Length: 167
Image (cartoon, rainbow, N blue to C red):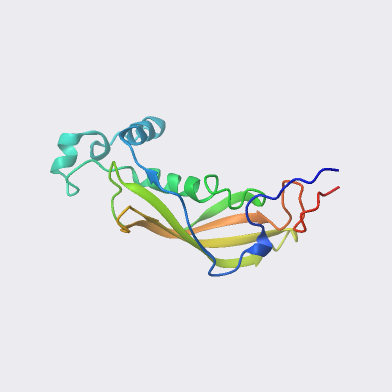
């Protein structure tokens, strides 16, 4: 049987304090317009240069939820960090929108393992809480909080921690 290479980290690789930084993602006008179309949120602070210029921000801003959604994509699919173990996104704790994300900003996600615990109902699963900060190109914190993930302790791609294919 051929061996399938493991991708990303598995549960036993994680520990409280382990920190990461995602690749960057520049927020474009198309992102904001597309997100507005997808959600129906066409608030003028996102869609009108004239309105936004008169606002406290002085220019158009991205939707807060767009930043939150992109942060999730930057953390998991983009990095592949938990490719073989992620099961489900369980929730958000104490998320704060601290500063606007402007069109043209490049955002990064800085995140670290805050807490790890075994699943009470499934011995092959665990719950991991991550401290998360969405920062822009200048290091300004735009959003922060915690994200909670359900992970498999056994790689889902058919490879055990030892690297041997499961039968």
